[in-house]
Image (cartoon, rainbow, N blue to C red; front, side, top):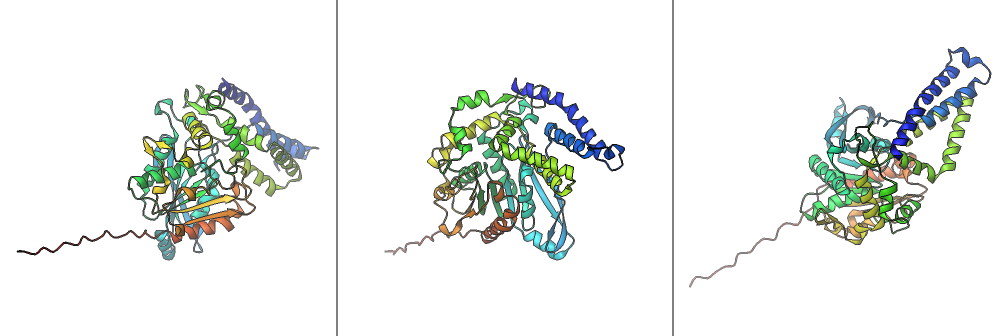
Length: 432
């Protein structure tokens, strides 16, 4: 009923939001006589603020059409490499006519960026992808909004997430492949590679795990505490809801995006209120650069997706409540997840000094679990002054984090040396 009530309220508010947008244009457009009346700027600013608070935010575009490589402009084409019910594997393909650039593109290592399925769309990693494209062939997991997936597609669990990642890794191929997981997917990414290693399958050359909940017993944050205060049944009964009949996923049980968004806002309500008030004042002043930055941020921040209920509840139980991965007790479809089986994949962990979502030590815990990886192939980075988003987006990511990630990948891109099998020495026999 909650989801249905939300949809009804959204439908009722939508016309008023469109009306507010029109009013804002009428009182701010240079060619409109209404822009000359007293208090026109205040009226336009108030109407736009109302429009942005009340509008429905669609999934943003990546908008990466070109990058600069070796001083030359290089076109980028976004295409779907593989499509499954709950995820698209995207490839960002680079093109150039410059011979030196083409040579660099062909020699680039391949990176699979595993985006979070935890509220926001994968476009949240736009800055991550754009930086990586300068030196790598880039693939990305683009998770589908669960309310858009028909119920007859079946359930989607954390086990399914892991199976998807393994299928993507096999599809791309492990030669020169490096996996970068951001936040929540550090757990299933580590599990996927661990299971492949245990089966004797080839594994990626390296894994970079950024701000993830590998072991949430370390420096628990408010997010971690929220997941442990109540039993799993409470989350199932109060947080998951059925998609209403006006959407393609009608009948599917999900953790709705609008509830997740309320949770995001509740973490820092004063900051968001101040941001909106500043936006109003900047509109009145005509500060176009600042208002444009506000729009870009909230166009991304306010665009959320529904998570499959089965997957969400698995994460609550396995990652935050029972800590099965660090305790060595996690079984995935009958196979034990044992990161110590990883031998040929280098490990890098990254944490933000001020991360209030994944606390200090939670991601670094992966090193203790990956005991089969030589110490020479393990590294950790704590980014001073960075919060959760600062380790994969923004100036700190581009100037401090990415150069070290790039160098780590380049160092470990060579094929691992394998021990030659021992030669059997035939025993000489003496004829009598």
